[in-house]
Length: 115
Length: 116
Image (cartoon, rainbow over all chains, first blue to last red; front, side, top):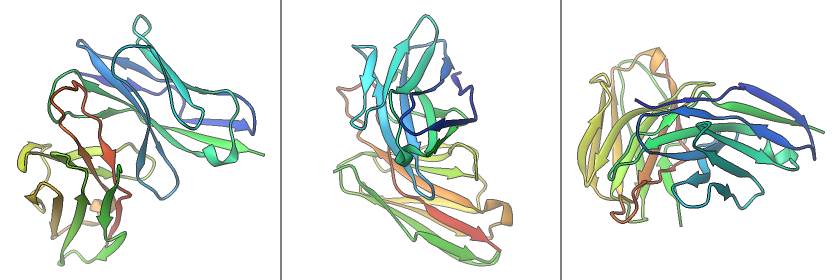
């Protein structure tokens, strides 16, 4: 069975500072990894995903994540955050099989940006 | 277009009421999902439909009854709910693209349900 651990439940940072949200997973099979963001009172939006190929993946709003198989990690980073990045961030893993798959989510990290 | 719509946005119901949540997507996706999310928690999977057939039921109580009338529409019928069922109910869909091993799920905005 797969599991996801998000090491920090809350991360406060100042605006324009860099941030890293940590995610570690455990699985005995190949996995695919996702970061979703949930703004207050909204649903989940896909931020980025790792399926195969380059281990560094980027989103359109400046976030990036690197898949590290040896450390079983998929940490999310942004070099300079904005107030609008305040949200809950969920790391998720699915198994490498075709068809409808179960997403296993971490507990989430609340990112708070202070001016 | 990666939009999943859900109605209503908010729903308040009594424990004896019968209500339904609706989810719709027009992306040609062939898998649809219901999740329940309590405050400050991650989403929990409830049901999965693949090609309009129920493929996963995560041991959800029978007071929740899913229905998939066609490939674009997913309903969740609610009856005799309890106050602890109050939560954000999220719908998601995914393509089930055969050429792609990992199937990416796209979520709707959710229905905020309050059971009195």
